[in-house]
Each structure stands twice: as C-alpha cells, then as structure tokens.
Amino acid sequence: MSPSKRNFSFSESPEPHKERTKKILKTHPEVRELISRNAGSIFFVIGIVALQIVIAVLLSNQPWWLALIAAYLIGAFANHALFVLIHECSHNLIFKNRSLNMIASIIADLPNTVPSAISFRSYHLKHHSFQGDYYLDADLASRWEATLVGGTFIGKAMWLLLFPVFQSLRPPRLKEIKFINWWTILNWVVVFGFDVFIIVYFGWISLLYLIASLFFAVGLHPLGARWIQEHYLTSPPQETYSYYGPLNVVALNVGFHNEHHDFPSVPWNKLPQLKKTAPEFYDSLASHRSWTKLLFKFLFDSNLSLFSRMLRENRGGITNATE
Image 1 (cartoon, one colour):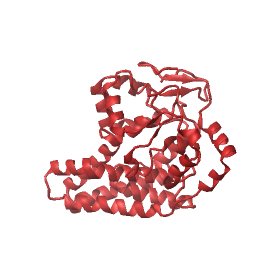
Image 2 (tube, rainbow, N blue to C red):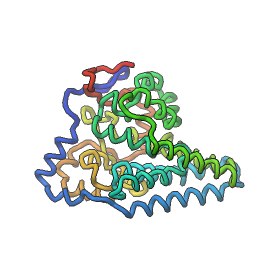
Image 3 (spheres, rainbow, N blue to C red):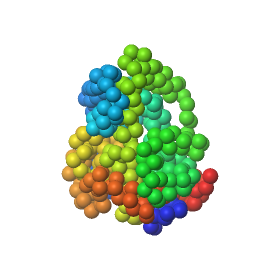
C-alpha cells in the first residue's frame, strides 16, 4: 500500500524479518557463526567519550559559533557513533552480562547531555518485537506529531532539528512500556551530573558543543537521514531499508539495517559479512547509497512525510491508530 499524506500505510502481512531469518538460516546455516559479541566495542566507547570531553574542554574559551561548527563537523559523528554503541549495548552485544552492557551504555551516554541510554533500551527492544505496532513501536511518530510536521520543507526541517524533543514526547503513547526504573534514575543522575561538572569546571561553551553535537548527530545533518533510511517507505511496500554508503565507516555499520533486524544478535563489525554470506537475500532489496541525497529527498518531496511508515494490526486489533 502506498504511503499517505494524512495516514500511515497498513499491512496485514506479518513483519518481514522473522521469515527471512528462517530462510537465511536454512540456506546458509554458517550464518550462526556470526552470532556473537564484540567486547572490543568498549574501547570505542571509552575512546569516543574521551574525544568529546577533550574537544569540549579545548573549546571552553572559544566563541560560540566555533563550538557549533566543531559540533557539526566532528561532534555529530562522534555522538552518532556513541548512539550506535548504545544500540549495541541494548542488544547485549558487548558483554555477556546484562548489567555490564547497561553500565557501558550509560558511559557512552555521557556526551549526549540528555540521558537516554536506558530508556532507549526498553523502547528499542519493543521496536524489534512489535515493528509497526502503533502502541508498542516508539520508532513510529505519533499521529499528532506527523500531522503537525506535515509534508512541507519547513515542517520537516524543524522536526529534524528538534528530533530529540519529538522523540521524548512519544512515551505517553506507549502505555505498556515501563518508563522509569532504577537503571533509568541512575542514567539521569550520571548524565545530568556530568552536565553540571562540565558547566562548573569548563563553562557553557563546552556544554553548548556537546548539546549541538547531540542535535546534529540525530537531526538536521546527513547523519539524521539514518532515521528516514531505516523504515520510511521510499520504495513501498518494502518497510525496512539498508544504507551501503561510505559513512558506515564512521557510523559503525549502522546502515546495515535489514541485516540487523534479521539477526539482532550479530554485532556491528560482522554485519557486512552477513550480507556477503547471504547476498541473494539482500541484493534484491531496495537500499540507499547516500544519506545526503536521502536527506534532501525527505526535505523537498512533499509526498514523503512522517506518515510514510508501515503500520500493522496491534494488540488491540486497531488498524488505523488514533489517540
């Protein structure tokens, strides 16, 4: 079904990944060998967090505009990589111990200024289990959100610029997901405490750099097109898309999204090998080669909006979600 300007598309078919996983395992049983963890990812976490702190400190006595430029050119890539590593922690792909993964994700969350690692874990795992379920998939925009943004350049540009804000307004819709637990509180205390530390010892310009890095990493930046790439219906009825462009190098292969949904227990460093092992299942799918091109398509194509997503029947049997 084609995407609509005023409503989500709807599919009566089950989500595509479970069935493809079964077929791939039957055809290529050696894929099971890729299911593992990458403990070396913790060094990426520590190194990138340290890089962001050093840059923030070096910018402490610099003009605000230089902090914004540095955030766009450097900080956005660093924070985006940290989001990918938080994502790895959510799937327990760094350590075998669940608590160690949660601690690693909180460390990776430090430069983000707004605590989100533990909350992301809860909502993201539901996204995998209930893709397209309006009341369980936080990756779907709320109806009011999609209506407000519309299909105009200004609306979509503002949505990308304020993407973290819009995401933070979705939890009330997802009533079956517990929003707060002790890990969430620990995440808040550590990250907000780190913000205070930066302000007290290095000043507001350093914090500005980190905040700008967060917003550029997920918003009005070529990296922000990742959110469009993953599930927006650019070639309907296909509902999940991969990106195979050069930015995967600095984005830790997060573009391999079909591969990740099919095998969420394969760590980031082995996703290209998964595609190479089962090319007949992935080469025939529509994919993206440029996040920059996709960003401009999203901004200027009035037919592509937040409603350009696939919805499927949820637990309440509702096929056309309302709030």
